[in-house]
Length: 104
Image (cartoon, rainbow, N blue to C red; front, side):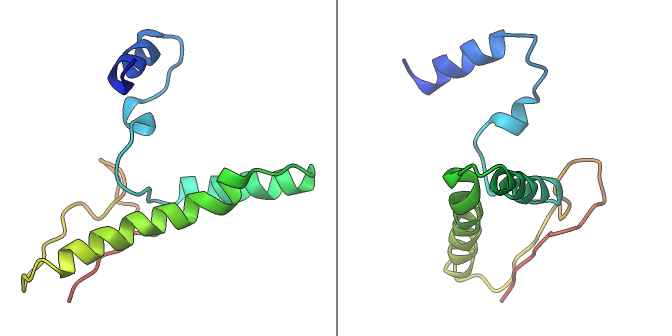
């Protein structure tokens, strides 16, 4: 079964009430909520003597690697000007917490 078929089965359930863009794979996460929530989840897990290796050790390094690969591709493109569109992390918001822009 392909990932698209699994995706189709997942979205056929209308009771989930989950936003598709929230679950679909994409670029690195940004904004203020997910990093805060991951840190809170890890903190609570430690209080309960639980281990969450994915949440505790892999999310932030993986996210940073996505950002670094993107920056490297941009810088290696050999262009002198770089434009940034949509600095906020979510459409319709002006929240710029943890927003980053790189240039050379």
